[in-house]
Length: 376
Image (cartoon, rainbow, N blue to C red; front, side, top):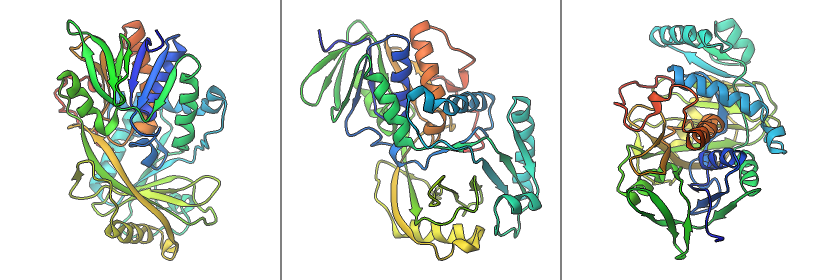
């Protein structure tokens, strides 16, 4: 039957496409469904940063393994994805933040990450023209990177098609089960597709998809806005992260020189509303120019918004459910693109071998959500 696969993926972002790709590499025929176009959810609205600096052992390990895959991804997928290792610099404007970074750097270095604490003189070399008022130093990892989310997803999707199908503009409206085991899915055009494995990688819509099998998961959408500027001569290489309450994070795109960035709104904006605001454009410009005064007159050429998919502790969910064959791979909390390659590989290993490559309890569906990710 043409409508039968070994696995069905719901969601056409980095998580769904990476999971589908690595299942395909295991020999499975994969059908991937996306209710809109590929990258229409969170992935196509992110700013392309890839970092390894996290606060829990599992997140650090997953990020480091994901980076290894990113370094080989052009050869793996057979196409350029604009990958560039320009680093990440987390700024410390308070003694408390400095102490946090110094403590986390010990754990990160113990795990083999090439991260260091740098002083103001080094930061001035890394970011010429940065305003060092109230700045104490920063956590810097030179191997952190950036890449083009659209090209990465495109490459993974092409791989899935080698043994299966990628079906955009097909929304899953029903998941059929039999004896507490997944059986098939139905689409908005009333077609039925069968598979013994169904993966919920629907990003900010993951909770709605889970409800199709009466499973409730703690994944909630949250709006974040972003922007990009006109091109300018390159003068810094890394993502700059300012964790002050009115801070922001941004980098200069490799090869083109545009500044791309965003900030986390306070208070948070829950829900699926992806309208943009003049307030963001005004504030983002002010916050960038405060850090690097030479950016004061640069023009913002486009702004947009998208949804983070948040969990209570800031960590993803990668786990099976009580419905046999139904998996949750989501709740990436803004880290989906950077963790995507390794998350997809882990999920494929678990689904096909019945084993977890390493201790994944921090990402379990039924965890207590008490271990908070500090470097959100």
